[in-house]
Amino acid sequence: MSRAAEPVTSKRSLIGLGVALIVCFGASLIGSAFTQPNLAWYATLEKPGFNPPNSMFPIVWTILFAMMAVSAWLVWRSPSDEGDKRTALTWFAIQLVLNVTWSFAFFAMHSPIAGLAVILWLLVAIVLTMVFFDRVSRAAALLLVPYLLWVGFATGLNFALWALNSVAGST
Image 1 (cartoon, rainbow, N blue to C red):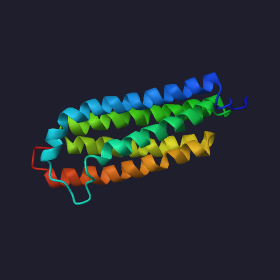
Image 2 (cartoon, rainbow, N blue to C red):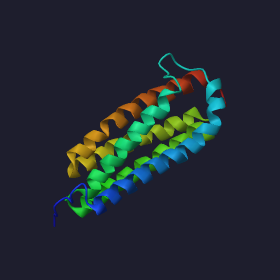
Image 3 (cartoon, helix red, strand yellow):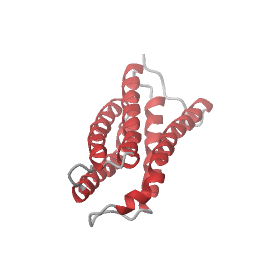
Image 4 (cartoon, rainbow, N blue to C red):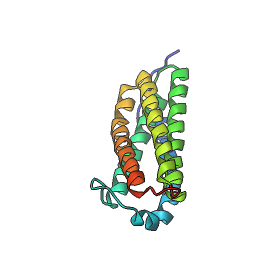
């Protein structure tokens, strides 16, 4: 049975938004914990001409994680079928875990090829998340478009980094 969406300013709704923000930025912090100690290694890699400046990454990711949190919150507070919401949010969780896993694979393992394997699965998970989000909230699905585009770009960058830096047995 469908219920009306709670007012955005209700205490429960605001707590839900807070939880979504904590979960998304928690994932961001975990990913950052794998990334930050390995930036010296990253600096040694040969970069393609389209590699953005390092200062751009935290800005883009902060915006994307905020948008992801709002997107998940819209699904959670939707009056849609609970089963549809559960499926959508499960896929959201899967893509969030893959997002963190990419940071581990690429940075902590110093492995562009492992990162490439993970990011390809991440792309699939983002698309599936968007499909299931769209069944619940079109706005929630659309909020993930910039994330999909950025991860698509990051996939190309990851591939280029692997190709430029691969030496037999080193990646």
